[in-house]
Length: 128
Image (cartoon, rainbow, N blue to C red; front, side):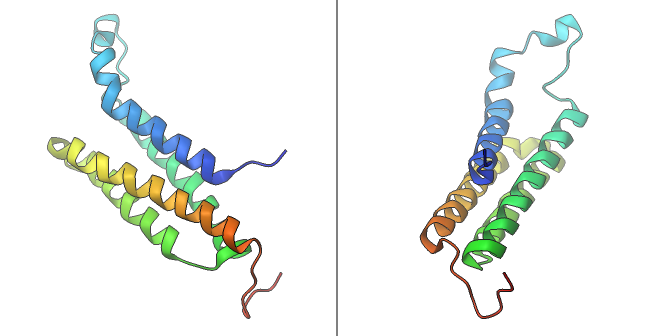
């Protein structure tokens, strides 16, 4: 069984977006029970690190084995920078989150489609 890293990255990005946008609406009563997942820094950093690890591996694999294009990775980095800035500038969380998720999902979709179109297209500098 093979793992589709782009699909996993899209899923993780969407899960992060749902967590950040919807969880406060439905789970605002959690602090009453002593549970703080909404503004939990460790959870936020963990989700960002997970998104970065999955995305980095996915784009490395797509670049190395398939399309040899840095464009998907650059789109991902732009989205990831906005995701990190969301943690720093709390007053602009929603304004930074929406483009961050859109850029990260777009990068994964572009990487996925580029991998399928090229299907092991090899460049002159390819060593496999």
